[in-house]
Image (cartoon, rainbow, N blue to C red; front, side, top):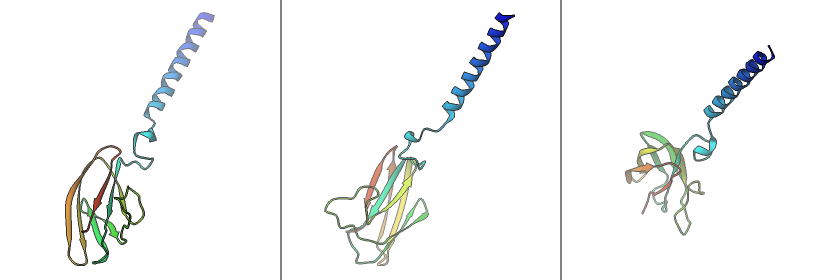
Length: 124
């Protein structure tokens, strides 16, 4: 009788352990992405000229906002720098279209891999 009870307890503990480990394996690890926002990388747009006002930017046919300030740093900015427009994106190819009030147009594609920070100059 005691042997059966021990066996049942052992089975119950084993089953409980399997369930706990399974639940833990399903939990998302925030260290797997670039921060805890669920995105894989970032694209930063900046300009070095204010001659034609703000620049309207579309990414993958969606308006992501205007670029309204000029970056005045002596070297290229990094993602999230002041006077830039930074967009969180997933892995893949991202097509951009940008136009200022003087009808200057910039187009292209940017490839993002896990953890990338790509910086794109729109201007002279």
